[in-house]
Amino acid sequence: GENVEQHPSTLSVQEGDSAVIKCTYSDSASNYFPWYKQELGKRPQLIIDIRSNVGEKKDQRIAVTLNKTAKHFSLHITETQPEDSAVYFCAASRGNSGYALNFGKGTSLLVTP
Amino acid sequence: DTGVSQDPRHKITKRGQNVTFRCDPISEHNRLYWYRQTLGQGPEFLTYFQNEAQLEKSRLLSDRFSAERPKGSFSTLEIQRTEQGDSAMYLCASSFNPKTGGRTDTQYFGPGTRLTVL
Image (cartoon, rainbow over all chains, first blue to last red; front, side, top):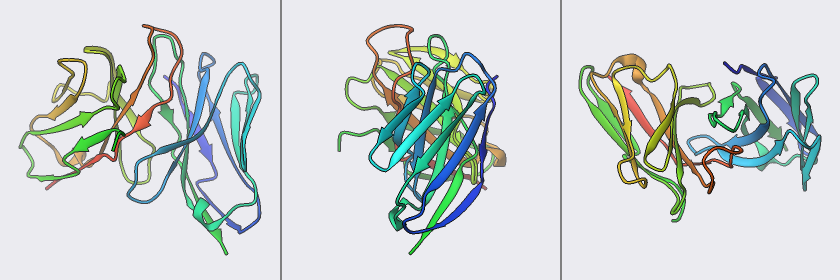
């Protein structure tokens, strides 16, 4: 089955700095890659996603890049703010007959003022 | 609130008891998913429904677990003879896609049901 690895497990940055979280996946048939943010005690919330037919997607301070050849994708957060502090999960899915999201183990991001 | 809702939010039970959780998806979402999340881990897929049909099951879903979506709207997840290892957050998600098959859609998660087995 699909195996998604996520690094780093914890990340601490100062307010205003950039944060980068990286994920690799094993199933070459995966074609959908969402990122979720989960605050303590809250539900996972989608922040951005990318499909395999594009290499990069941006939404304000958040961007995701995808390298299908290398089977890795990354989340970039610029101008970080304290409210960005949360656990971030990457995931991968094959679509068609397999809609399960296979999640990484998460990255705990702390943005200090 | 038009988001995914789950009930109960918390459940404490003794080992060996049966428990049932309910998920109400976003209105008109035809796909519904169950995941399990333990502390410090990402959600793990359990099962998926397209309307009332259960189309995908993880090997994590042992014989003690059963899920239903009888009318293609709300879903229930039952765990029989609970074990301490079943303690986790059970998350439900829903999405919409008018086709059978096709691409993965954005999945919207509910707040979860936290199960503690004593």
